[in-house]
Image (cartoon, rainbow over all chains, first blue to last red):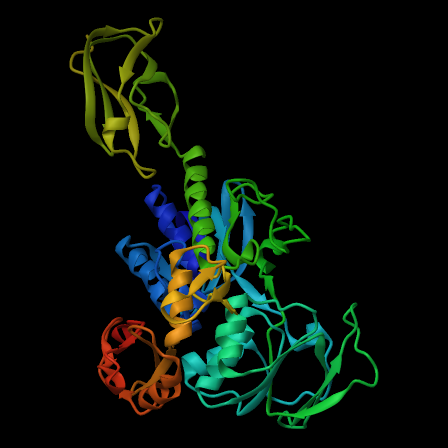
Length: 419
Length: 120
């Protein structure tokens, strides 16, 4: 089973930043992504406005994502795409992550986990829309996927429910591509999206925004044919007698995002009911030691710049967490020694001035004490004699020996003349 | 007096514009970009376009593009029509022009992704 310091789940902006920052802080890192390409939802967010805080530039989603994927590639970080995490098991010193991809099922071991699983869109079922189940009811993200990645128009004449930013951006996008957007309906009395998006996405294209209105029913057998709109009161309850029917072939929903935390929940990570993401400390570590959370899985962010920032914090602290953990190798002894102290070395610590105590098993004359690394002597000292009652001590610089977790350290005494 | 919302950044300042022509005064802006935006809106409003262009590659049927600088707002649909005539059949990189000097506006239509370079 392959072993890593940090496994990052999710290859969007949070996961990319986390992986890069964990690697730069000395961790061995694997990033797991379920899609074929890294970049997450930014791949389909072709509009601009990303990176103003971080880069002081107005980038499109793909441009912002590619700045990170290129850095990720330069860092030569291991990644698995088209790979899905099916299960994570807590083990003694870390986690066993079970993955499935085209090669079948495999597992990797990791000391720390960064959950960068993003968020999901609320669906029609979650906002209580009644009626038939025709095709043509999409979340804004799905409509965006069709339009911007597949090059397929999801609507000719549509209604948008919800004034979240993705809905506003899709209103403009579909209009640019020749669809008719009949209106954006919002149950609340104020818009959910940014004011600039109301202006540049709706007002610029004369798309009406109807506040305190919602969709109460959908019509159509195979394909959507119409929706029923109702006015709502201040408690967002539809007012009887205010229903109007609007003919359209698509209903696009932009009614909120929810952090995606199925893996976290399966691991019993404590969630905050307010953010719907894990409760974390300042290092973005969750209630379970070694599990970190970042990006929209932690809480829904307004700007991607902050998603990247939280990824960097989580990745760095996951790497530091691993360093704070023990990474021990054994100091073994040959049968010429009675014992040696210490018995282990923690490679995550400074071992440049390690005091080594030992006793020989028998009385030995004219002998050489040696420290072998993978069978090769890396230190030796001659003694006229060694006797079990007399403890020897040496100050040894183990840090200069380029040790790793696979190194074998053995202490031995070679005897020229055991007369 | 006219009221506008600045669309330059997510802050979305509410701008108040008084006077006309040379003598206009702008208030409510957090930074200088707000004033520049207000002046532009009062004279020749400009916008960007971010859209996609068809490609000849089935694994990647559309490529995201944008205009290299803002264009007059009333040219948006004309530029869209030009972009929709094109099919990209070369593996171009981010920043490469898909259309140079579109409609003589001294603005290029450029790719915003290098995804085609990663195709097999």
